[in-house]
Length: 66
Image 1 (tube, rainbow, N blue to C red):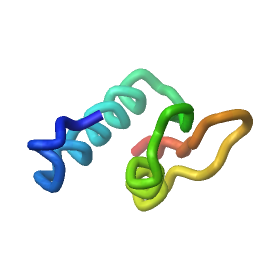
Image 2 (spheres, rainbow, N blue to C red):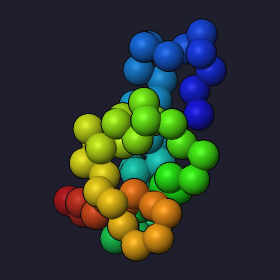
Image 3 (cartoon, rainbow, N blue to C red):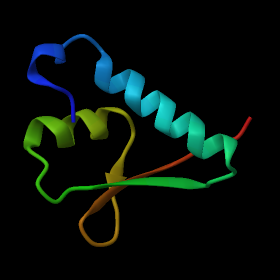
């Protein structure tokens, strides 16, 4: 979640870049985020980042290892 005052300043992208990089550095194959309580703006953000509907109440993305 990004504070309203920081929305539109790419803070969400930076946070998600960090989380995905952390997962990759730990050898994780996939990252999931809960859809519970998320509004449409948040869900659209994740979908633009490549997250797809997953089992249950989540969106997921496969992490790329280089």
